[in-house]
Length: 114
Image (cartoon, rainbow, N blue to C red; front, side, top):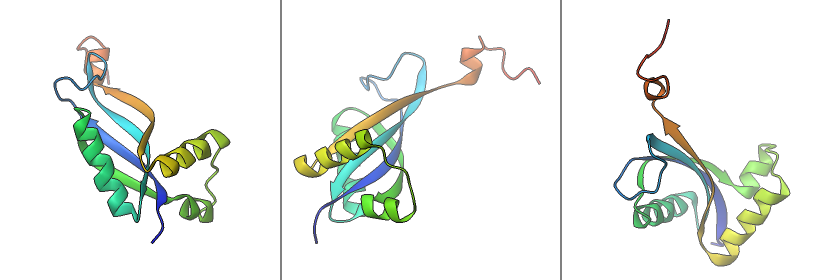
């Protein structure tokens, strides 16, 4: 079976040395990972993130490029270029990282005013 690139959304928690911003309680990572199937892409992604001192908690798969196109996902050229790179290098590409912050901390401990 040929290698394909899969789009994954990985939620990570905190771990010493993870490089996440101060005050973050975790992050969401958009990754493109090559694999023979999505399960292999997930295993490789989790292993790479653990090597990078991140703490993967949950992985959601969005399928291969072909599967996403069949579902009418719009995939911009920049995203396709990252997918091509992941396939060419047989690697995991972290395309986006969005840290999570505790809302109470951002409000100075005030919590929900409602």
